[in-house]
Amino acid sequence: MRKHPWVNTERKFYERNFKKLIEKLDLTSDLNILDYGCGTGGFASLLAEHNSSLKIKAVDSNPAAIKLGKKYYSHLPNLNFEVLNYIPEGNYDLIFYNLVLHELNNSGDVKTINNFLQKAYNFLKQGGKISIFDNRKIPKKDFEKLYIRNKSPNKKNLMEEYLEHNKYTLKDWKDMVEKSGFITEYCEELAPNLFKYRGIKK
Image (cartoon, rainbow, N blue to C red):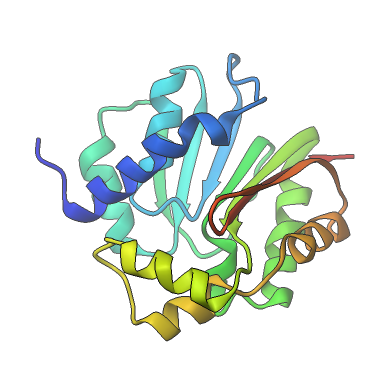
């Protein structure tokens, strides 16, 4: 079945980055996983295919995205989609925040991010992990080069994209996550304006 352009773009993006995002994670057992801000399910579907014993809840506040996820990935029995604008209470082994924290509540303000990080901490099992993949601050001239190359069907104008995706340095992100109680496992810059962070619940 030919995929919707939004689904196709997202899926290809995560196919390129999947190995990097699951690096150093043991995904061999029947883990209980939350993918918050899942979009159309590009990353969650790859996780579900990676190991059929993983139990994955994919959540997003956008009903259109969830509808597409259900349409194209309904064949994966270990992947469940739900429309929510908050973290569902649970007892998770692993929570993924992929390219979502910077845009929470359409602003990605520090207070909102801290609230979502704290909820993640509360709903993780002892020793559970949080995995964050997001934007980090870079010079505007460098961001403009990325904007020109961006082929996303949902792309906004340059200034809107810049203000939305260029808010916090890597240190800002690390400080926010550690403030929520996580112990940093590692924090790494990814070219050109991305980073990944992994923390462990004490």
